[in-house]
Length: 353
Ligand code: ASP
Image (cartoon, rainbow, N blue to C red; front, side):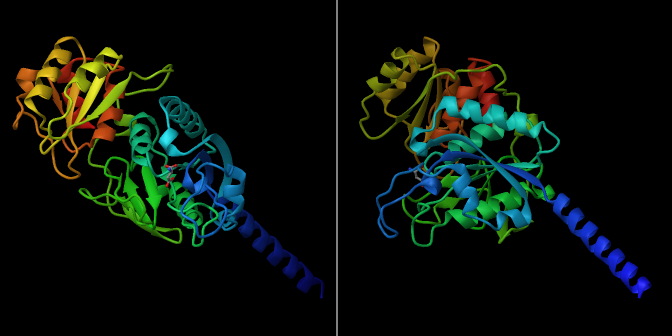
């Protein structure tokens, strides 16, 4: 009888220790909330109108009770805005906090909840300024947290599963939504309303995830993270860079006007291969001569804006954006201007990142 009892006790201790080991094996993931539709709320479950950034990080975490099965999760509120109000100030705060958290050996990964509107810009900014191989994952939702079939909870669950996965390390900043894992550089929002707005149209996905089970296909093809020469250490302001949309008969004086209002860089969202009217080219030439850096990108969603194709960049002193769209070109130019205003040097950044 006594032997049976001590056997049972030994078994219990074993099971308890094993359970403890499993519990402590769970990764530690910090969720940084910034706002967006994922934290939005509406009066009813079926209306299109809603307000972004209403729900705090604790409510977001509590709404997905399954998180505790896959990670030890804690949350911090960085901001609570619709991402149309995302700013340099929030980017700097976010990048600095992520670097700080990831330098702690007890933190295994980071999830950032964000609006979808400027998700690709924040992801690309962090891709170039977070100096760690640990996973950093942004997630978002198209439907507010109060909607029928809200997409946020499963996106958060999958994002935490990716952030806590050792195989996600060294893949740059990622965006997880609708079971897909995107790289920050490739990712873009493609529809104003579709739930499957999230795409990596040219270079494809980093991987996929299904209820927290992840499969990885690739690593980013451009430099990021620790390889990046950009740093936000000691930086409390980013230079002004404006994007100017080019169309037939564009008001070319917008270019000079941006420069005279203080833009240190201008990105043109050109037609075709980054083209623009002759009048606009003349304006570009004038502002470049007076020290403003101009990057030619394209309003066309796919393909390359190539150097010296229809515009002679060598003569004009401009930079060609390659495959980087205007919004992300603006992010890279802001960071580039922290270190240089030389067009050749900045072209080398656009070729590398
Ligand atoms: N305007 C919202 C935002 O970007 C849209 C969304 O999150 O889907 O915050």
